[in-house]
Length: 146
Image (cartoon, rainbow, N blue to C red; front, side, top):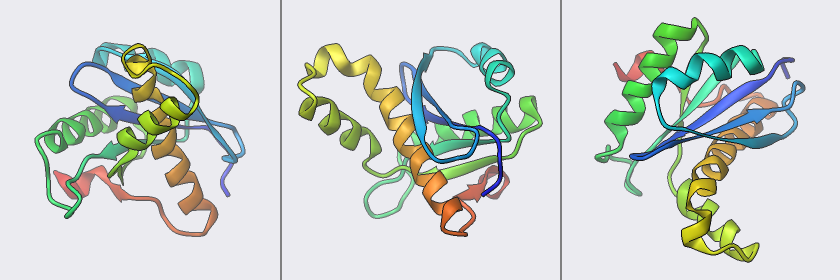
């Protein structure tokens, strides 16, 4: 496993959830949400990641959804403006899984909504880390979607 932090992003219509991994890639934690692309350079400068992962929202059948293009455009922005490798991770069901985890923790779904995006980013990042630990290259390069 390569040393270095990674950032995970869950792109939403209102906000984008962000998560960061430990330096050794063992675990991921939510760090919050961003509302604008202009916030990305500050996060990248603060955490100094070696790679970025963006959730790729697909339908259960694997087809593109209305949200897919927004995620691809966000990933393209990251690749062009950070100089870091950006990989797309299939994120089917991560938002609903994050919401279920919040409910199981006793959180009100309306009040927890801002936290769900960061929790979904954490699930995306954990998925990528698990793939990397198993020796599999996580997801696909953003260039494959352009």
